[in-house]
Figure 1 (cartoon, rainbow, N blue to C red):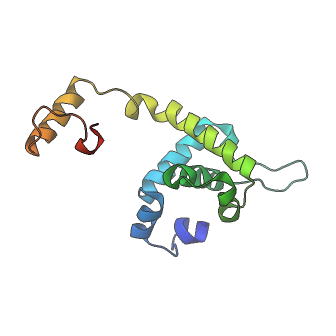
Figure 2 (figure 1 turned 120 degrees about the vertical axis):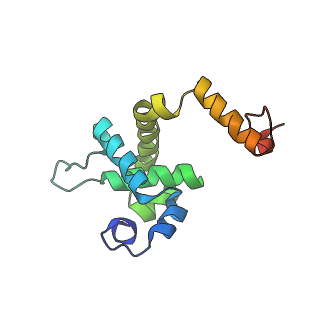
Length: 138
């Protein structure tokens, strides 16, 4: 996985990374590093007999793939080499960390400036006074 997407000369280029992870590599790494700094669970550690545990990259990739593609936790075992229970724990901790780290900036209700900007965008596209997406109007 590291060689495929994260090495200095990855097997797959930027466009394939964006397709696979639904974001560019720099953003993925920014989120991963923020999560690792926020929650010690994501820091790679050694077990009681000295074996290295899963890396932050493995845990975040498992969580992200489950979110992005809806794949089950036991499907990720072959890809990131982690047990189903570990993938579920990684997902829960990842979501909690993302909300705690980025929630105030990105997961808030729109303020007046946001609403004005969104209304202007809608107006420029011929949808005057509309904030919602037309494909979500029921």
